[in-house]
Length: 93
Image 1: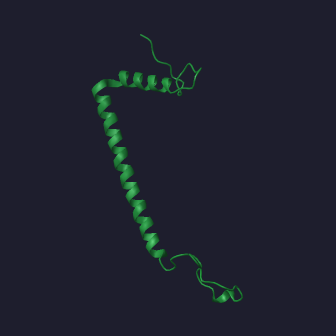
Image 2: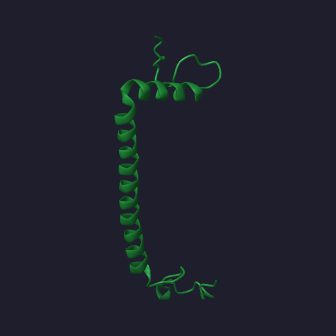
Image 3: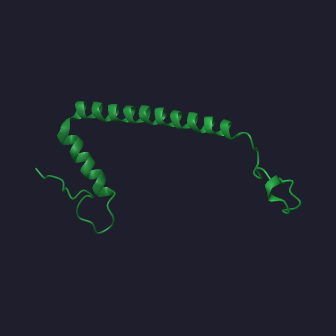
């Protein structure tokens, strides 16, 4: 891709030297549409994940949910760590 400029002797005559000049408005519109689409997609995905978590919580109760979360965080802890990342230890009964 070439700019078509062979001499820099008269810089006042030089206009845009980047590809596709004049399409900035189209790129701004495309970026705005993508931005809105991404936000809508994120909101839907987060709502779905929260609904699944709430349904799981309703079915299994607080205690089992907390025990599984603590067990998961302990298993993800670095070697040698004796507590979960949040500092909460599982409750023994």
